[in-house]
Amino acid sequence: MFRNNYDNDSVTFSPQGRIFQVEYAQEAVKQGSVVVGIVSKKYAVLAALKRNAEDLSSYQKKIIPIDTHYGIALAGLASDARVLSNFMKQQSLASRLTYDRAIPLAEITARIGDRAQTNTQHYGKRPYGVGLLIAGVDANGPHLFEFQPSGVTQEMLACAIGARSQMARTYLERNLDEFEGATREELIKHALRGLKESLAQDKELTVDNTSVGVGGMDEPFKLYEGQEITNWLETTFENREGGAEGGESMEVDS
Amino acid sequence: MNHLPQAWGRPRDDVYGAYDHSYFQTSGPKQSTQQPIVTGTSVIAIKFKDGVVIATDNLASYGSLARFTDVKRLRQFNKSTILGFGGDVSDMQYLDRLLLSLAIRENYSSYSSASDDTDDTSNLESLNAKNLHTYMSKVMYRRRSDFNPLWNQILVAGFGNDEKPFLASVDLLGTTFSSPSLATGFGAHLAQPIMRKVVPDEASVANLDKETAVQTIRDCMKVLFYRDARSMDKYSIAVVTKDGIDLKEDEKLENQSWAFADRIKGYGTQVV
Image 1 (cartoon, rainbow over the protein chains, first blue to last red):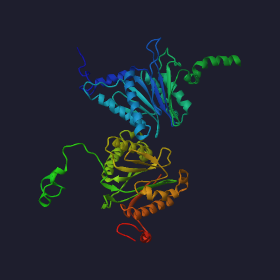
Image 2: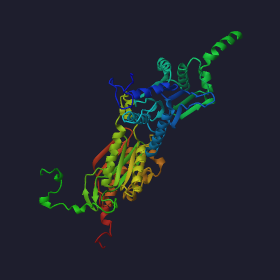
Image 3: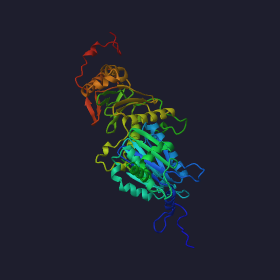
Image 4: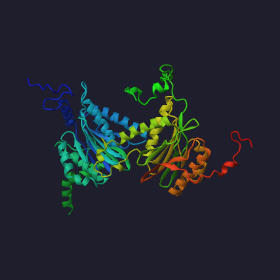
């Protein structure tokens, strides 16, 4: 009866000046599990919550290292992220081949931004249903960029996208002042705490469902998963879990 | 001048006769450059502890004719990178346009807005000499692989990734090499031995100061003018340092001494 007539393609404006297909694509990003990114003066960190379709299946990859100096975290359609990440890998390699230079993060971000925007301008095409956080280090220092299906890209100090990411953003906004001078370990802790804020009530961060990506001025971007992040999870959340028990045992001791 | 735009800037038909269009081939096999036509001679450059000195003369020769005497063959790319072109001048002009488009792409700040908040946008990391030399080598190798080479040998001077002085060469085949001092064309025979006395190896670059480096280059330009028949006494010289590029494009050779000339025997019609 009241069908929306203006969402059949991504090139038609609604009378209110909206392009519904682009807005639907942005909804797809909100359906994806949460990813968090933060930069300090020397480091860029990504943290992501992985989801598995069923208990017996593996977890969906959330952080993709692109080049030695940067990687991306995705929220939304993983297949679209695969297309974009392949493009980014190719462009990064081309930059190294033709200029012997690690591609500046601002440049690669602009390139996928342009690519995503053209998708919203051609009949028969659709916007990418994925949001990305692009984090790493280039000649100008550490950077974090946010990419949206509309083609909008922004440089961020800290950012979270995906399901329930508002909680993580609130945490990041509250602690914003600490990020710039934070050490590597502190920055990872902030990212994990931000990630934790966005979790559903009955969920926990475990070595299975958490990914961390770290890039720095003097270290290549690396993806940490599984046993590699045990320590970070333990030290970050010791107050929460160990706090109640530890408090009791302390009393017993005294 | 008449009212026909297509005739503007061309020799007038009523004075010189109609233009012979058969000169332009409209059919036949595809042809590419077989030899350079209007040429520039040597480019010479030397590294010193804080940068690089590079020089060329301002002559473009048409065969043995000194055809153009005010051709600038040093081209500044950005605040700390400069190129010197030897060989075909039209190919140099093509590369000049190519580099201009690259510079515009590189500096147009659609994506460098991230650095807008910093006061000085000039310290924004752009392509350095190492990056540009790699790019030039790809351009030159691509063209030689198309059997249509750009007939140049190019010296790129500036700073590398390690912020140390950078000097490297690329030629029409895409061959690249690097050395504390480099010279193209006749300079490779006449100037290079002089420069090598000053910087025999990479280690001696650290002991060479700017004044000595500039003086060496000026001496070499003089020697080249003495012995290279396709050279002239007006030249360009550039000093690349961390503070930027000091480019002078209208230098004259000073203190020439042709006293050695009457001892030279055995040229042309001279029989004694």
